[in-house]
Image (cartoon, rainbow, N blue to C red; front, side):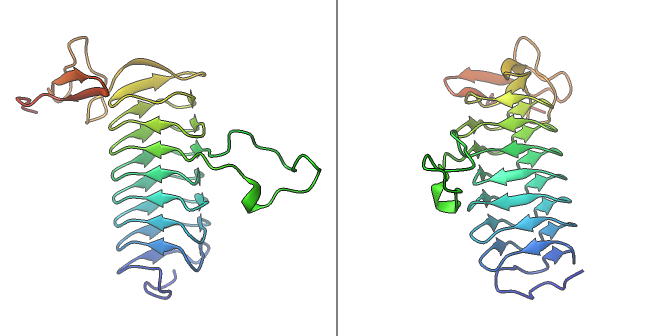
Length: 207
């Protein structure tokens, strides 16, 4: 493993495996772990206490908060991930809504030719294995996107999304379990109230 603090962009006690590639100009926060064959491009920022799994690719100035877990094989293209987000294996967060290999005059596209409509994943949300989130989408706080879903619309706070195209089929608790019909978690007992942006934790909830 590469020792911590070998480049200016690495924080205290960062672990970067020898096969990973962290570019000059990337920032990795304290105590974050970067596993085998992960690639972090210049201009990307990763917070503290994160885990980047095998073959993760962060590019196009992606911004990752603290205590974020990005599992094996994920592609994060310019997205903003708030704190405590989880991406299960194989997730793709896209940013260009009109992708082409070449320009209209037939020239191979470069970095400056791509459109940028980055995805935003709010605090505590989970994106399931092999799910795809399309450009410009915002996934709300503590939302749960199921495995293999294709998300083409904004997701409410605590929304539970399944399918292709992704549709909301219920609500998810902070603990990850599905809520019942009165917005109460059968696992931990937390209760929620409906708001314009989705659900929020009831003030008198006692988990």
